[in-house]
Length: 335
Image (cartoon, rainbow, N blue to C red; front, side, top):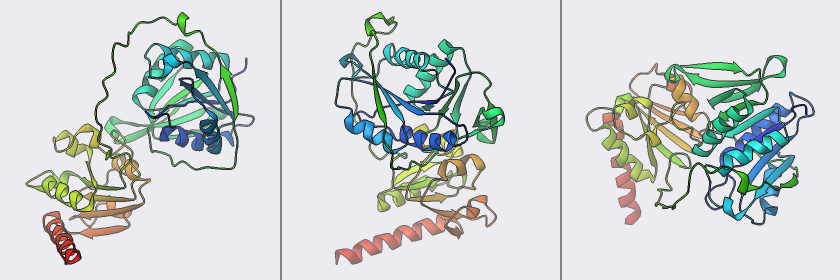
């Protein structure tokens, strides 16, 4: 069968909503679809026996033409044996031209398994997608530690890529999807890993991926009490703390707080960059922010070219003054 269409892995959230990266990939796929004719966009869902009616409708509103569903109660939780093999079998049954997955823990595992089984190439952690020469998928990804980007053409089919979450914006349209239910004999799938127990931990919901306000520190804040000031300001603004790659490498933030091509892609309403110069790899991570406010003592810092509000000055003077003003405002409101 001739490869046709775009196949997307439909990753669920813990409460069986659709993960945002799937909606973002669907939106981008609509753009790719316009450049290669007669390609249908398909989402593969792997999960328990539940009512999928609303999920199908939602996926259709983001551009899915078909939703392939493999359901079994043994698929209630992600399974390292079942999910990669099921997705691969679907890709063999409905050979796509392009396969896209989120660069999540699940997406990366399924992508590596699937590309090996299908004997095709895989471009990981992409920051952009396009159609290049000979209607081949053109995948852009960071290289040399995020200092440069590389455009990669995949000449084997299916063409596969994983894409970082929040790199694209999701948008809805008036569209409906067709449901295709598939049965796969799970008992025949080889079990190399046994799921013994699931221990669910409390997760801080204020992650940088879903934060509305982010206060982020760079090299300029990596001294004295720079990050102490950033945490104080974030507390006053009910914001989430993040930082640049240098802030992570110097131990001021965790990997989960790092913003940029080699960290997380964020899309807050407000992004406050303190002591961040604005390297390309960091700017890629904040390009979907609503408003960017930058504080830097270097008036020529690249961050100012992308900021909605730029403040040139010493953060060790500006941030304490801002915190004092916020304290005063709180006092006035209490009176």
